[in-house]
Length: 297
Image (spheres, rainbow, N blue to C red):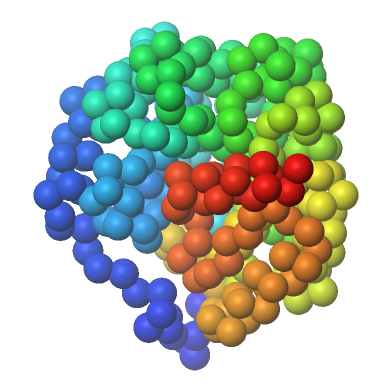
C-alpha cells in the first residue's frame, strides 16, 4: 500500500454504540438476516442503524464472484432460505421502514441469478407494509435469460427504485471487477427503464481506485444514455490489505465538482460525498427524486 496516502479527517466515523444501533442489530439477529451494512463493512452503519435504517442482503452471505473492492465472502453459496422473503418483510414492519433497500450477493449458480427471490421479497414486503416504498440493488444477471430476470423484475413485481451499481470505469473492470462486464451493466439499466418507464433507476460509482477524471465524466454520460435517474458517487475505502489499494482520496471540493457535473448532465438525483454509498440516505433521497419528477411534469 502507498504509505504516503493517509486517510483524511473527513472520512473518519464514530464507532456504532447507540441504543438504536443495538435495537436494529437485535432485530437482524433474531430473524437470522444478513445486511450489506455489516458484510461490506459500511462506514455509515452507526448513523443508519441508529435511525433503524438497514439494507437487507438476501440470497445468503457468500458471493460467487471475487471483486477486488468488496468485503463480502466469496465461495460456494448455501441453499436458499425459502423463508427469507417473509423474514425480511417482518423485519421491515418491525423497524417501521417507510423506504426499504434490498440487495444481494451475486448468485451465478442459480438459473435466474436470484431474480425470483427478489420478486418474492418485494411481494412479501408489500403484503406486510403496503405503504413502504421498495428499492432493490441487484446483481448484473450476466448470461441469464432476460425473460426470467430483467423482464420479471421490471414488470411482474417491480420495485419503486431499480438500482444496479456500475462501480467503476470500463478500463478498471478487468482488474477490479473481473467477473462483470461494463456494457452488460449499462444494458441492464437501460432495458429495465425501457420495460417500465415508471421505475426510477439508480447506479453507483466509487472513486479513488485508479480512474481518471475524464473517465468518470464518460461514465456519467453513459448512464444518462441509459436513462438512469440517480447517481451516487463515493470514496473507495480499502477493506483489507488483500483488496485493491486506494490510489487517491478525493477532496470535498472534488466531490462537489463531480456532483455539479452530474446535475449538469441531467440526472434527476445526485449524491456525491466521501461517505456516500448506494443506500445512504436512500429514504430521503427517494422522496426528493419523486417530488422532482412530479414537479417537472
